[in-house]
Length: 439
Image (cartoon, rainbow, N blue to C red):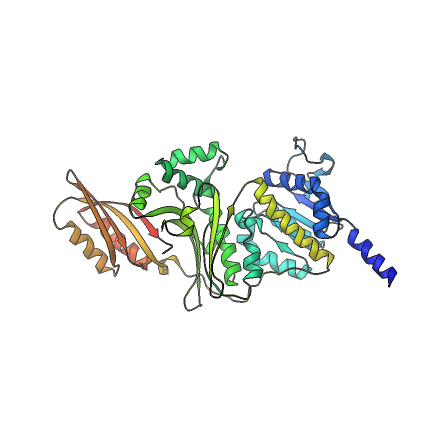
């Protein structure tokens, strides 16, 4: 018995070897923490963790705090070594990341990833490959930086029925909209400030056009509703068309504008929707108070009720925190000869088209300032079954600004209404259309 206990102790103290793919802002922070906090990580895991190699695209760069003898440009050889226990992938993009992750699985390594684009596109395939190989795939860092969100959905709420996930999942866009709201700045000015402070990339397209948030919405919807959802299933609008006038109009309504990711299960449970777009939300809603580059996600479940997860959603240190949390969990699983919860897809719910989504709308029109125009506009809304909640009108030198806020209606009905409004002689322009959420 004593010999068996001693052998078990020796097995537990064998270093678990980790390969790191990518050494940018997040990767370098992961490497630094693994090096400086090695003793703490070993205590939490129950065995030492050894950084066995760091794959980069280009060698020769100065990487402060990164052990240069571990750096290699041959990522494939690193993941195929055969002695690697865990691969951390923070490269991003679809390829070569997908190829490298699949290779890691085949060679017995579990994977921790922050790759939202890949998981949103090919998550089901990667989960299946991990299950076949008997290894883990963890990706807390792919959705909301340091905020624990994936694990609560996969584990803590596994026995509950989640009906809705509503959140701010992109720090760049939240910073821009917050600055537009708090300072009166236009979109271009707010983007310029976000870039200067490092919140926006040199090419901000993925953020401001909603691609980043759409990938995260696909991941969240798949986990929350236990069904396959890809980025292609997510309706997407960015914030580049949001104006200072939209922000001011929201204020007059007691609202604020946010770029939201919204994932919903239909009332009959037979379909899901996932969408990303700007929306007005009441100041009374918890998400309205989320400022600057912070993220927050509101989860509505049948038994648990309403839950909110809040924190920094991006940056090297917050994202590295989520990566290392997954690393500890995966290493513990390795030591116990087990795997954690995998992809719990057990339904094949279709993604309902945006035309069938029901919500409220804020429609701003530039119209002729003359008698009968309001009645004409109201008639078009009634013709398409879109009920009006409030109307606000302001005249100026023969022109008038008309703001209509509707009751709940389908997106298709609203689109048909707007098309008819644009055809009216009395309507000079449909200045903006924005959804109203969170009520």
